[in-house]
Amino acid sequence: MSKRIDITGLSAYYGTHKAIEDVTLSVEPKAVTAFIGPSGCGKSTLLRTLNRMHEVIDGGRVEGEVRLDGEDLYGQGVDPVAVRRVIGMVFQRPNPFPTMSVYDNVAAGLRLNGKVRKADLDDVVERSLRGANLWNEVKDRLNRPGSGLSGGQQQRLCIARAIAVRPQVLLMDEPCSALDPISTLAIEDLMGKLKDRFTIVIVTHNMQQAARISDRTAFFNLSAVGKPGRLIEINDTEKIFSNPNEKATEDYISGRFG
Image (tube, rainbow, N blue to C red; front, side):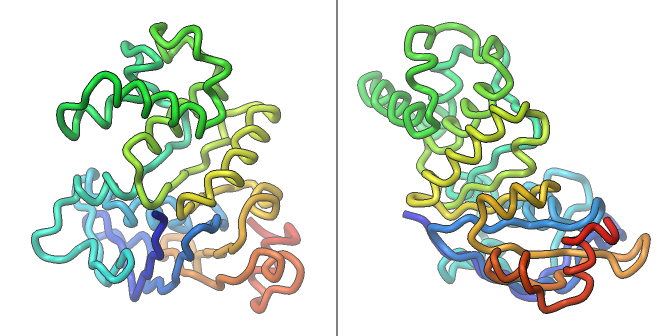
Protein backbone atom coordinates (compact mmCIF):
# COMPACT_ATOMS: atom_id res chain seq x y z
CA MET A 1 0.00 0.00 0.00
CA SER A 2 1.48 3.34 -1.03
CA LYS A 3 1.99 5.96 1.63
CA ARG A 4 2.40 9.70 2.01
CA ILE A 5 5.77 11.32 2.77
CA ASP A 6 6.01 14.54 4.76
CA ILE A 7 9.34 16.39 4.80
CA THR A 8 9.66 19.23 7.33
CA GLY A 9 12.57 21.67 7.70
CA LEU A 10 15.03 19.22 6.18
CA SER A 11 18.68 20.13 5.73
CA ALA A 12 21.20 17.53 4.55
CA TYR A 13 24.94 17.53 5.09
CA TYR A 14 28.04 15.70 3.93
CA GLY A 15 30.49 16.49 6.69
CA THR A 16 30.47 20.28 7.01
CA HIS A 17 29.03 20.80 3.52
CA LYS A 18 25.32 21.62 3.53
CA ALA A 19 23.82 20.18 0.33
CA ILE A 20 20.17 21.22 0.85
CA GLU A 21 18.59 23.66 3.26
CA ASP A 22 15.23 23.85 5.01
CA VAL A 23 13.10 21.80 2.60
CA THR A 24 9.45 21.33 3.50
CA LEU A 25 7.13 19.46 1.15
CA SER A 26 4.71 16.55 0.98
CA VAL A 27 4.70 13.65 -1.48
CA GLU A 28 1.25 12.28 -2.21
CA PRO A 29 0.51 8.54 -2.40
CA LYS A 30 -0.42 6.86 -5.69
CA ALA A 31 1.17 9.68 -7.68
CA VAL A 32 4.45 10.51 -9.41
CA THR A 33 6.32 13.48 -7.94
CA ALA A 34 9.24 14.84 -9.98
CA PHE A 35 12.23 16.78 -8.61
CA ILE A 36 13.72 19.12 -11.22
CA GLY A 37 16.39 21.83 -11.15
CA PRO A 38 19.96 22.59 -12.29
CA SER A 39 22.89 20.29 -11.50
CA GLY A 40 24.13 20.50 -7.93
CA CYS A 41 20.90 21.85 -6.44
CA GLY A 42 20.43 18.83 -4.15
CA LYS A 43 17.70 16.88 -5.95
CA SER A 44 19.44 13.51 -5.68
CA THR A 45 20.59 14.22 -2.13
CA LEU A 46 17.01 14.94 -1.07
CA LEU A 47 15.82 11.78 -2.81
CA ARG A 48 18.42 9.74 -0.91
CA THR A 49 17.40 11.22 2.43
CA LEU A 50 13.96 9.66 1.93
CA ASN A 51 15.35 6.15 2.46
CA ARG A 52 18.52 7.17 4.33
CA MET A 53 20.79 6.15 1.45
CA HIS A 54 22.79 9.37 1.86
CA GLU A 55 24.07 7.96 5.16
CA VAL A 56 26.08 5.42 3.16
CA ILE A 57 28.45 8.31 2.34
CA ASP A 58 30.80 9.31 5.17
CA GLY A 59 29.51 12.34 7.06
CA GLY A 60 26.00 12.08 5.63
CA ARG A 61 23.40 13.38 8.09
CA VAL A 62 20.20 15.40 8.24
CA GLU A 63 18.43 17.94 10.39
CA GLY A 64 14.64 18.08 10.26
CA GLU A 65 12.03 15.39 9.76
CA VAL A 66 10.99 12.82 7.18
CA ARG A 67 7.76 11.02 8.05
CA LEU A 68 6.09 8.12 6.25
CA ASP A 69 2.38 8.22 7.12
CA GLY A 70 3.35 9.92 10.37
CA GLU A 71 6.23 7.61 11.33
CA ASP A 72 9.55 9.43 11.83
CA LEU A 73 12.09 7.65 9.59
CA TYR A 74 14.93 9.24 11.59
CA GLY A 75 13.43 8.45 14.98
CA GLN A 76 15.52 6.93 17.74
CA GLY A 77 16.02 3.21 17.19
CA VAL A 78 14.78 3.21 13.57
CA ASP A 79 16.90 0.83 11.49
CA PRO A 80 17.97 2.36 8.14
CA VAL A 81 17.90 -1.09 6.54
CA ALA A 82 14.27 -1.48 7.59
CA VAL A 83 13.53 1.93 6.06
CA ARG A 84 15.03 0.78 2.74
CA ARG A 85 12.74 -2.25 2.72
CA VAL A 86 9.67 -0.05 2.58
CA ILE A 87 11.24 2.68 0.42
CA GLY A 88 12.91 1.08 -2.58
CA MET A 89 15.30 2.77 -5.00
CA VAL A 90 16.21 2.55 -8.67
CA PHE A 91 19.48 4.21 -9.64
CA GLN A 92 20.67 6.24 -12.61
CA ARG A 93 22.46 3.38 -14.31
CA PRO A 94 21.01 -0.13 -14.44
CA ASN A 95 22.80 -2.19 -11.79
CA PRO A 96 21.65 -5.81 -11.91
CA PHE A 97 23.83 -8.14 -9.86
CA PRO A 98 26.24 -9.20 -12.64
CA THR A 99 26.85 -12.79 -11.55
CA MET A 100 23.18 -13.53 -10.86
CA SER A 101 20.51 -14.83 -13.21
CA VAL A 102 17.42 -12.82 -14.08
CA TYR A 103 15.47 -14.95 -11.60
CA ASP A 104 17.99 -14.54 -8.79
CA ASN A 105 18.19 -10.78 -9.33
CA VAL A 106 14.48 -10.44 -8.66
CA ALA A 107 14.51 -12.93 -5.77
CA ALA A 108 17.58 -11.44 -4.04
CA GLY A 109 15.73 -9.06 -1.72
CA LEU A 110 13.23 -11.69 -0.62
CA ARG A 111 16.01 -14.13 0.21
CA LEU A 112 17.79 -11.50 2.26
CA ASN A 113 14.61 -10.97 4.28
CA GLY A 114 14.44 -14.65 5.25
CA LYS A 115 13.76 -18.14 4.00
CA VAL A 116 11.10 -18.28 1.29
CA ARG A 117 9.52 -21.37 -0.28
CA LYS A 118 10.50 -21.98 -3.91
CA ALA A 119 6.86 -21.91 -5.03
CA ASP A 120 6.38 -18.53 -3.35
CA LEU A 121 9.58 -17.22 -4.93
CA ASP A 122 8.40 -18.36 -8.35
CA ASP A 123 5.13 -16.47 -7.87
CA VAL A 124 6.84 -13.27 -6.71
CA VAL A 125 9.45 -13.35 -9.48
CA GLU A 126 6.80 -13.74 -12.16
CA ARG A 127 4.50 -11.13 -10.61
CA SER A 128 7.38 -8.64 -10.26
CA LEU A 129 8.62 -9.16 -13.80
CA ARG A 130 5.07 -8.75 -15.08
CA GLY A 131 4.77 -5.62 -12.94
CA ALA A 132 7.94 -4.27 -14.58
CA ASN A 133 6.53 -5.17 -18.02
CA LEU A 134 9.45 -7.54 -18.62
CA TRP A 135 8.01 -11.05 -18.17
CA ASN A 136 7.26 -11.77 -21.83
CA GLU A 137 10.78 -10.76 -22.83
CA VAL A 138 12.65 -12.88 -20.26
CA LYS A 139 10.36 -15.78 -19.29
CA ASP A 140 12.41 -18.18 -21.44
CA ARG A 141 15.78 -17.04 -20.08
CA LEU A 142 15.22 -16.66 -16.35
CA ASN A 143 18.38 -18.64 -15.62
CA ARG A 144 20.63 -16.51 -17.81
CA PRO A 145 22.65 -13.59 -16.37
CA GLY A 146 20.73 -10.38 -15.87
CA SER A 147 23.77 -8.52 -17.20
CA GLY A 148 23.09 -10.08 -20.63
CA LEU A 149 19.91 -8.02 -21.10
CA SER A 150 19.78 -4.73 -23.00
CA GLY A 151 20.15 -1.50 -21.04
CA GLY A 152 16.42 -0.82 -20.99
CA GLN A 153 15.66 -4.39 -19.97
CA GLN A 154 18.28 -4.20 -17.21
CA GLN A 155 16.64 -1.09 -15.81
CA ARG A 156 13.23 -2.78 -15.83
CA LEU A 157 14.88 -5.77 -14.13
CA CYS A 158 16.11 -3.40 -11.41
CA ILE A 159 12.56 -2.07 -11.05
CA ALA A 160 11.28 -5.66 -10.77
CA ARG A 161 13.90 -6.31 -8.08
CA ALA A 162 12.82 -3.20 -6.19
CA ILE A 163 9.08 -3.98 -6.28
CA ALA A 164 9.53 -7.69 -5.44
CA VAL A 165 9.84 -6.87 -1.73
CA ARG A 166 6.60 -4.84 -1.94
CA PRO A 167 7.84 -1.43 -0.85
CA GLN A 168 5.41 1.39 -0.19
CA VAL A 169 7.51 4.02 -1.96
CA LEU A 170 9.66 3.78 -5.09
CA LEU A 171 12.47 6.32 -5.56
CA MET A 172 14.02 6.75 -9.02
CA ASP A 173 17.21 8.76 -9.52
CA GLU A 174 17.32 9.72 -13.23
CA PRO A 175 16.30 6.19 -14.22
CA CYS A 176 16.29 6.94 -17.96
CA SER A 177 19.45 9.04 -18.35
CA ALA A 178 21.52 6.09 -19.63
CA LEU A 179 18.78 4.71 -21.91
CA ASP A 180 17.81 5.15 -25.55
CA PRO A 181 14.49 6.88 -26.43
CA ILE A 182 12.55 3.64 -26.93
CA SER A 183 13.68 2.24 -23.56
CA THR A 184 12.94 5.62 -21.96
CA LEU A 185 9.35 5.52 -23.20
CA ALA A 186 8.99 1.96 -21.86
CA ILE A 187 10.12 3.10 -18.39
CA GLU A 188 7.83 6.15 -18.52
CA ASP A 189 4.88 3.97 -19.49
CA LEU A 190 5.75 1.62 -16.65
CA MET A 191 5.77 4.45 -14.09
CA GLY A 192 2.26 5.40 -15.16
CA LYS A 193 1.12 1.88 -14.33
CA LEU A 194 3.11 1.50 -11.10
CA LYS A 195 1.72 4.66 -9.49
CA ASP A 196 -1.55 2.83 -8.86
CA ARG A 197 0.37 0.71 -6.34
CA PHE A 198 3.29 2.85 -5.19
CA THR A 199 4.18 6.36 -4.16
CA ILE A 200 6.80 7.32 -6.78
CA VAL A 201 9.43 10.08 -6.57
CA ILE A 202 11.70 10.68 -9.56
CA VAL A 203 14.69 12.96 -10.07
CA THR A 204 15.05 13.98 -13.70
CA HIS A 205 17.06 16.50 -15.71
CA ASN A 206 14.61 16.03 -18.57
CA MET A 207 11.86 18.61 -18.15
CA GLN A 208 9.79 17.09 -20.96
CA GLN A 209 9.89 13.80 -19.06
CA ALA A 210 8.73 15.49 -15.85
CA ALA A 211 5.89 17.13 -17.78
CA ARG A 212 4.87 13.80 -19.34
CA ILE A 213 4.93 11.48 -16.36
CA SER A 214 4.54 13.39 -13.10
CA ASP A 215 1.44 14.53 -11.26
CA ARG A 216 3.36 17.03 -9.12
CA THR A 217 6.69 18.76 -9.71
CA ALA A 218 9.10 20.34 -7.25
CA PHE A 219 11.67 22.85 -8.56
CA PHE A 220 14.96 23.27 -6.70
CA ASN A 221 17.65 25.88 -7.21
CA LEU A 222 20.87 27.30 -5.79
CA SER A 223 20.96 30.87 -4.51
CA ALA A 224 24.66 31.01 -5.49
CA VAL A 225 27.51 28.66 -6.41
CA GLY A 226 28.60 26.75 -3.32
CA LYS A 227 25.38 27.51 -1.46
CA PRO A 228 22.95 24.75 -0.46
CA GLY A 229 20.03 23.86 -2.72
CA ARG A 230 16.58 25.06 -1.75
CA LEU A 231 13.03 24.22 -2.75
CA ILE A 232 11.64 27.09 -4.83
CA GLU A 233 8.14 25.74 -5.34
CA ILE A 234 6.08 22.58 -5.63
CA ASN A 235 2.72 22.32 -7.34
CA ASP A 236 0.66 20.31 -9.79
CA THR A 237 2.84 19.63 -12.81
CA GLU A 238 0.48 21.40 -15.21
CA LYS A 239 0.65 24.55 -13.06
CA ILE A 240 4.46 24.43 -12.73
CA PHE A 241 4.92 24.16 -16.50
CA SER A 242 2.18 26.57 -17.60
CA ASN A 243 1.97 29.23 -14.90
CA PRO A 244 4.57 28.87 -12.09
CA ASN A 245 4.37 31.14 -9.08
CA GLU A 246 8.09 31.98 -8.98
CA LYS A 247 10.12 33.79 -11.65
CA ALA A 248 13.10 31.48 -11.07
CA THR A 249 10.90 28.51 -11.96
CA GLU A 250 9.68 30.21 -15.11
CA ASP A 251 13.24 31.10 -16.11
CA TYR A 252 14.38 27.51 -15.68
CA ILE A 253 11.39 25.98 -17.47
CA SER A 254 11.80 28.41 -20.39
CA GLY A 255 15.53 27.69 -20.66
CA ARG A 256 16.79 31.10 -19.55
CA PHE A 257 19.18 29.38 -17.16
CA GLY A 258 20.16 25.91 -15.95
